[in-house]
Image (cartoon, rainbow, N blue to C red; front, side, top):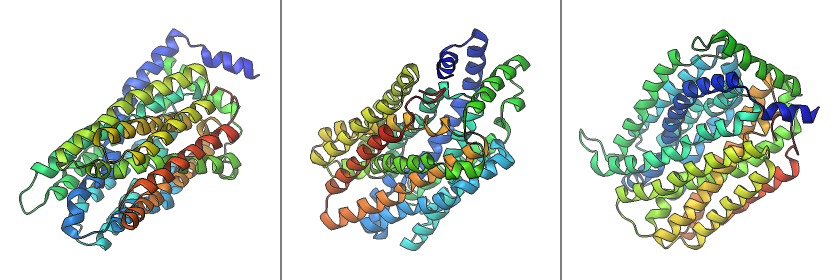
Length: 435
């Protein structure tokens, strides 16, 4: 049975390739832009910190807690949000998420105390909950697992691209935007929050809930795409919500994702501070320097996704890029006093962590279908994103206690490597339609 499925996974007809090409042209660029503004709104406090921390008198621990408390609301509402996406459809629910998170992100410009900072970050997490796992689930409506690593890579490339664009943009806003009684960091939240609201409104009419609703596909193309999805569903063993939540590998994957996301947010929230600590003073210069690792990471993660799809292998690819991520984090700690050494180390680490996340998401989506996929993907993502709370708070505490980020970076390196080892141990050896 497995050999037959692998043959199917490797074969594609011209009509099938054309159909998937149409789907990709329609969906991926739009979802890519959505995730750019999403991630930018989530992590732009890394740049806002360069001004607002001093102006408002926040300690590193206050900043770390505010950065991380986002993920508390995110964790609590992740599964309900994904189930509501199944109920109301991706078009309405993803549009709602974007509009509400854009509003809350813009309102962060009115922060005037630690408590208001905490409240708005918590609300931002609640409003954004379900976006990422919702899109991952949405992609399973269109693509079988044999195509999912590369497609996921193209979508997740929005994370480094948001840094590539957001770094220089945020630095420019901090230095140049002022007036009407607002500081640069306040303009930063306002100007980077409003695009989410606008794109959210566009989402309400642009997205289709699935293959049957896509008027831009021919009936023959719909049959081809739907056939592949239905064929894959027969191979999956978990379909109900209860089965998805009780599947032991989902909980293991959640722990693995916790390790990987810790590395991602170690870079995302602290990269501007890491570069500033090497002696770079200008916010605009910091912005351009942060763009370098993100630019290299875009190419690296797309190559990693394509290679993993081409070789039909996930576990050892995850291990390899996990080790690269751990190495980069460790080198960032060891050579953090030299600007270019730090940038090179961060680049190595970011390529590793972005690539490992791309390959990772091909594993849990291969064993879950239906409501099990909605609940299981959301559970995995919410467990993983708890490290988005733990890692920033831990890094802030370490920075206050030691006046250095080195110990925190070494700890994150160990976590990422641990996650890679767990994938090798517990990941499916050669799951059907996947590896």
